[in-house]
Length: 283
Image (cartoon, rainbow, N blue to C red; front, side, top):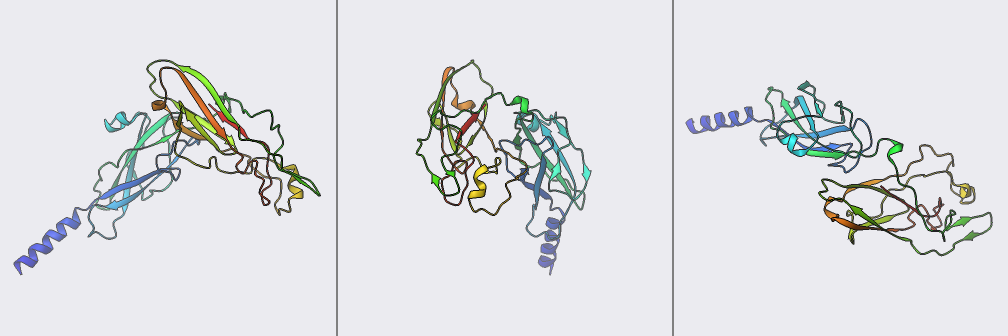
């Protein structure tokens, strides 16, 4: 009986001191996204318990902190936002409310939560998100293509015929110089059609079949495609990606290269109505 009593007491102590542990931090549904381009990103996390024996634990409060670098975050210098302790059970899509975010910068954050006994968790592991370009004026580059393709898509639909001219995929190449002591370098890139980007012969990123497909614009030939969809699309957009290329650059002379494919933008499949010829954009 004494042994059983001691076991129960130890079990009660372990349960009583079980705390929450915030994990799986996301920004706009993504873990450590390289780019988000909303002025107030939404932050989320999942609470786990530090003891498997605990049941029914809940979050009663949280504190989110954001810093301009990982070192500052780990050193307790929350120079971008400190929400302070907020009494709330919310842990999903919490809007960022700190100082105005800057284009192309990375921000580091973590969260602490309190359980129903008002016991604070340890800080979560650091997470980050990268900002995109928030103003159209910051897109300094221009769309490029190749002269043999013109503006029209490869597949041209007409009432009684379909034309499929043959074009090779364009390869682009450009030399550029950089200064010494590069602290950070980031590239913003997209294609009308799929693309692969290379810096000094090394492929940038590990993505394939990017960017994602969107309804880019009005297609005049859609009425001949037997597709039951209204051509008056809304919110014409082109998805873009961001990559950190700091480690790929070298002092002085560098070279960037790109392969641009058709993708869905200039697709000849019978069930896809294309938009135009491939284009490439990089900043």
